[in-house]
Amino acid sequence: MEEGKVLSQSLQQSAAAYVIIHDKFGDALSAFDANETMPFFEVLDTAQWPEIALFMRDHPKLQFNYMACLSGVDYQAEEKVGIVCNIESLGQRNHKLAVKVKCARHGGSIPSVAEVWHTANWHEREAYDMFGMLFTDHPDMRRILCPDDWEGYPLLKDYKVQESYHGIKVPY
Amino acid sequence: MQELERAGMGSVRVTRKGNNVVVLEKDLVTEQMVLAMGPQHPSTHGVLKLECLTDGEVVTHAEPYLGYLHRCFEKCCENVDYPAIVPYTDRLDYLAGMNSEFAYAIAVEKLLDIEIPRRVEFIRVITAELNRIASHLVAIGTYGIDLGAFTPFLFCFRDREIILSLLEWASGARMLYNYIWVGGLAYDVPADFNKRVKEFVDYFRPKAVELYKLLTENEIFVKRTRGIGIMPADVAINYGWSGPMLRGSGVKWDLRRNDPYSVYPELDFAVPVPDGKASDIGDCLSRHLVRALEMEESLKIIEQCIDKMPSSEGFNPRSAVPKRVRPKAGEVYGRAENPRGELGFYIQSDGKSTKPLRCKARSSCFVNLSAMKDLSKGQLIPDLVAIIGSIDIVLGEVDR
Image (cartoon, rainbow over all chains, first blue to last red; front, side):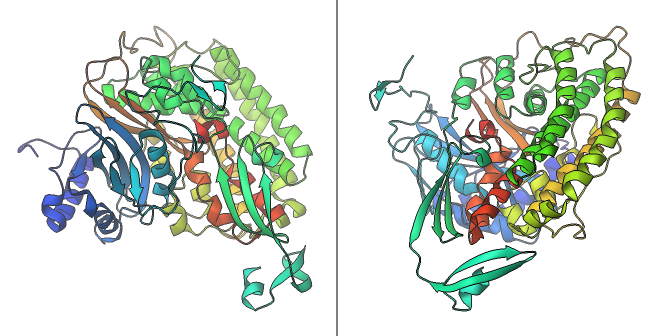
C-alpha cells in the first residue's frame, strides 16, 4: 500500500480486513491492491484457498458471509486462467473484498470453495464450463451452460468454435 | 413429510387438507420414477428443465438443467465496444430491461469515474422503478396462473401494458429499450411524460390494493404458498440470494439502501420485510408478499422523483456521454438492485482497447435458482410448482 494516500472509508475497511487475513496466512497472499474501483488481493498458494475462505467467513471480525460474484478470467499473457471472487459481509460488517486465484491455463486446477459459500457451486461450474480449469473437491463438477459433449472452452481468448455439433454446422 | 418418513412409515400416499398433511395409505412399495419437468413446461417460466426423482408424490431429488437459452452474452461483450453492450444487457432480464441497463451503466461509469447530470439520474430512477413495477406485475400474475388463479394475471397484464406504453413513448421500444446509455440517456423524456406518469401512479395505487385483496389475501392462494419452501435467512445469504428472495427470508437488505447508488439516498422509501404475521418467514408467500408490497414503494419513489427532477431547460441527455469509451486499466464490480435481486457486472479493462477484456454478468436469477436442489427436497410435486414460481426466474438472465 502506498503511504500517505488518503483512502475512502470503504477502502479503509477492506484494507483492515486484509490485514487480519494477512496476519494469519502471511506469504500465501499477495500484497493488497488498494484501488478505488475494486480492491483485491491474490492467493499465491492456491492450496490454502479453501482455508482462507473459511477463515474469511468465520472470523468474528471479518464475517464475509456473502459471495456476490465469482468470475472466471483468462490471463492469456501470463499463460494462466483464474477466478475473481467478490466477497462481502452482508448485514454484519459491510466490508467488501475481491480475491483472485490463478492456475495453469491448460489442465490447471483450483480448490473449490463451494462448501464455504454455496453460491460458488454453480459459479465454479460456469467457470469450468467457460475456461476449463478444474475445481478440486467440487461436489458436482460438470458443465452448466454448454452441453456436456461440447468441445473447447468458449471464453478462452484463442477459442475456435467446433466445426459441427451432432451433424449441425456451428459457425455461421 | 420427512417427519413421517423418520417415524418409520415408509412410503406414504398423502393429501393436503388445510394446513395438515393427511396420510391416505402407508407402507407403500413405490418405484422411484424420473419425472422431467420442462424444458417445455408452463410452470418453469421458460426453458428450464428440472429432472425430478419422485417417490410417489414426493420429490426426493430435483436437478435443474440450464443453458437452453445460452446466447454467449459474455463472449459477445468481448467483441463489441462498451456502449454497444447496452442492447445486449436488455436481453438478459428481458422483463426489466431498464434495470439491467442501469446496472451496466453504473459499472462502466464507476470505471470511467464520470459525473452524470442530475436530471439524467432522476429519469433513470423513474424508468427503472416503472420497469420494476412492470416486472413484479408479471411475476405476480404468472405466479397466480401457476397456482390456478387466472384473473389476477389479466389484471396484471392490463396495468403492465400502460407502463410499457409509457416506456415505449420515452425510448421507442416496448421491452428492449437501449435507453440508459453509458454517461447519459438516449433521449430526454417527452414533454408531458411526467404528467402521464403521475396519472399512472394515481391510477395504479388503488389497483395494487385490489390486486392484493384479490390474490395475496385469497385463501386458496395462501394455502398453496404459506409454509411451503421455507428458506432460513443464514442459508439464503450463504446461497447468495438477493432481492425479494432474501428479504422474504427476513433479511432487510436492499442495495438501494445498503449500497446506495444514483439518487436513492435522497429518496424516502421503505424496504418491506415480512413480519411473520401474514406469512411464515422465508416461505413462498413471504417472497410473493415482498413483491406485492414493493410496488407501492416504487410508486412513492416515482412521485418523489417527479417532484425533485430539475427542469429540462438547456438539458442535453447526451452531454456526459463519452465520445469514445476507453476506461483506464482496471477492474470494477458494479451492481444495482434489480426486481429479481442483485445484478452485477464484473468488467475488466486493459486500458488500451475500447472493448472490455472481460465482462461477466452476475445474474440474480442464476444464483437464486441454484438453491432449487435444496428447496425441492421432500416437497410434493404441486408444491414444486409453487416454489419455482416464487423464485421468479427469467431464463434469459439465468442462461445469458
